[in-house]
Length: 239
Image 1 (tube, rainbow, N blue to C red):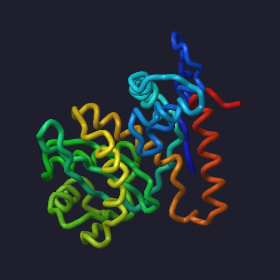
Image 2 (cartoon, helix red, strand yellow; image 1 turned 180 degrees about the vertical axis):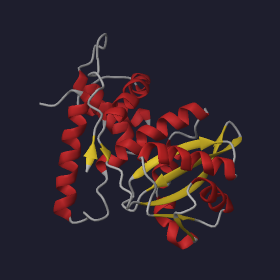
Image 3 (cartoon, rainbow, N blue to C red; image 1 turned 135 degrees about the vertical axis):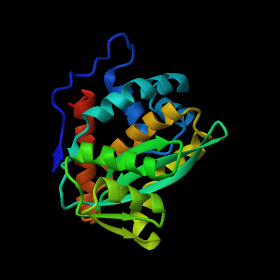
């Protein structure tokens, strides 16, 4: 089940000369597909919309987080299985670690950028997850990094923990869309910018990518139609 925060005010497009439907479409293109800002500019031009890539960038920065906050979220369950993993990202020549958690369906639950890869960083991720989900998982699956086991013993010792690299492909695969975007964007310039971008990218992916249990052609088609309708509704451009 998906839940949405209905307390947020509607999105305002005041003082923007382009119609909301064009802004929402440009932001959707940018976050849904591995496109550069200039490619989004070119795709809009093909439809007769003359807008600079810099304008698309400003729209993505302003409206992307607003759209993401309004997207429906999967209802937490104590029967979920958490797959946890971390990936190194270079920002200005410095290594940072993006820690991510996904559930058994590949739905991205949370991610946090941190400077370290130790137990305290793993504890921070688990604490955030418990606060957001409201309940612990049925099982936790990670690779062989010892920080996860140490953090689990302190945060939720009663939860089963399976530590095996082969079991954690789901979490590892969740990094691939961000890696593709990293190449397209030629790297990230700031930690804050990466955290903000990753949050929006994950929210859009959660909406449009169907769960693993719904992989038939028809169910995938219907899922995408429903996702597109939800996107237009939260952007305030539904027909």
